[in-house]
Image 1 (tube, rainbow, N blue to C red):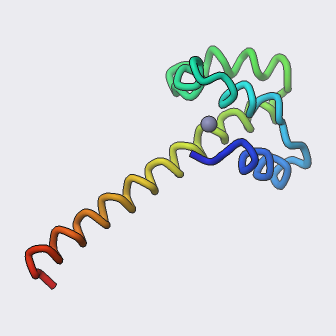
Image 2 (image 1 turned 120 degrees about the horizontal axis):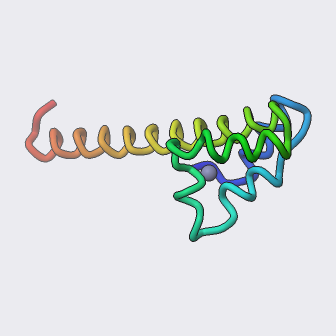
Image 3 (image 1 turned 60 degrees about the vertical axis):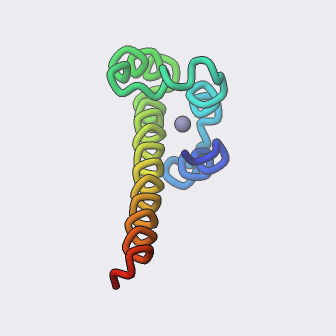
Length: 94
Ligand SMILES: [Zn+2]
């Protein structure tokens, strides 16, 4: 998943603000990291974030999770493709 710096840069480019407090809240506490990326909690956490940071902050919270899912799935895809290529190569299948 992208490091916090990438999230800050992405928020800055989208909104003109880095929303560092939101990104640090999501990624900063190792014990709560999974819970804060849990899409079933978006409604609950989203209300809390919107109250504190407004609609734009809410959007950046959701976007953070979106970007993490995309990065993680792309990484898995690359690993699977490499595994398939290695397997085909092992068996001499071209
Ligand atoms: Zn994250």
